[in-house]
Image (cartoon, rainbow, N blue to C red; front, side, top):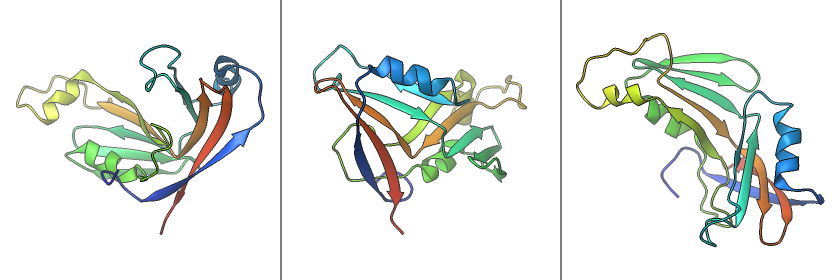
Length: 160
């Protein structure tokens, strides 16, 4: 995966826990403003093997038509002029060649329908004070192996 920002090596550590992924996420989500659960209980075997949980992102990135704001985990805020917010977001995401699991960190968020105006020449009607996209950049998280019922934490370590 040579598409994104900094190269990283994931550390995957087994955790001792006997609950379900829903119990784990319920406990986590109460304590963090930003969290997610990608659930895959059923479906094609290769797509339903792992449930993924993320919380406390490294960055919260908000894209606008002309700028990007990056809020770090420590609360500091940076504003960058940008006509292509996705380019800035892509540069923040760590990459890895390790393919043990389908997700080992990255950008999780939403792109507003009005973001199409970045690429198509249509009138801007969106309130320009509101972001047209928002992503959390997650460099660590929890994996629940649905087949073996094992729990892991992953931590992306940046290679300098």
